[in-house]
Image 1 (cartoon, helix red, strand yellow):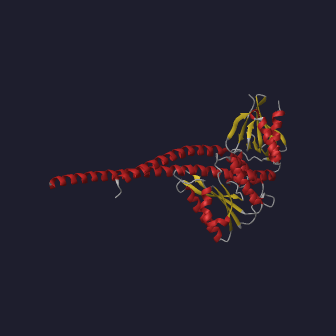
Image 2 (cartoon, helix red, strand yellow):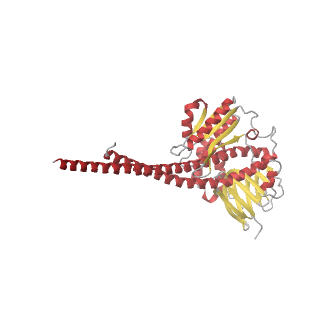
Image 3 (spheres, each protein chain N blue to C red):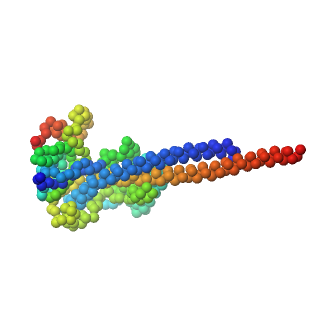
Length: 301
Length: 127
């Protein structure tokens, strides 16, 4: 049975923990809102780029002339997994769910006899993967969210990936991140980046029709020719896709942290309630005990 | 009022400009091109240079872009640019400082952007 003093100390420590978690929850909520706005603002660019790519890719047949980022290397022997996690913890299962999916992918690929390389974005993913797959990690990027997540940061990551690809380091690249559904639900998503699969309407002359808003199919003029534009557009698109994934991840991270901190605050409150009950009971018990002692002492006289 | 075409300037981080204009001149890789309503559909790459927006018969806005892509349809002109600044907001001293650093680092692409920026301040085209 802990003493009254122990209980008091305990209650106070849980109270200060609750203060911290509720402050973190508030901060996460504010950051989540900002992250959502940022993700929203980035949408027009991604949409328009997708539309352009769709119509371009439809024009260029994926034969010998197509850029390598679209056509692939013709093999799928070496896979690059870009594991995007957060730099910081205390956000529930956010990081571990990504890492779990990454592990699953790695095991499946290795079982198929493929080679796997890992590109870690975010400190937490690296820390967790390093234990098991140290030798597979080719590069790590951390602190990319400071002072804030920017397109330039994403472009740097994309440039690094493109460099590795041109050096023939891998054949297929996939990014693993958490897609933001709501503050409570984040969905682990695996998206293939290289070779790039153009959006659905690219089939046939469909894309051009979509581009003009459903009117008669527009035949674009290209300046310079399609292939040159495409080879300039694809690396940019890679950056955009990485940026988009990081934005989703960022929103998910703050959402997950908000939920986790909300739970932590509630648990702390529950705990304080229980401890206060125990405290009051034992205080009452000691008072009763003292009374009994006095009364029985008086009676004995 | 003359016929207009929807012009959009988009950066990866946000939509910068979206409004109907009479004409817009885009610095294409293979030369500047003006886009007016009912222009033929076209996709082009953009070099570092100035986008001039025409309203009411004269240039209403000049925006510097550091390269990108342009998509033109009969009723729309969309420019995707990674960096864009209104020419009036360019800080000459900062550009010159950066240009010097880039020259030292032999970063050809950045040097081109810097030089184009200076040219944009010194020689405004399309009066």
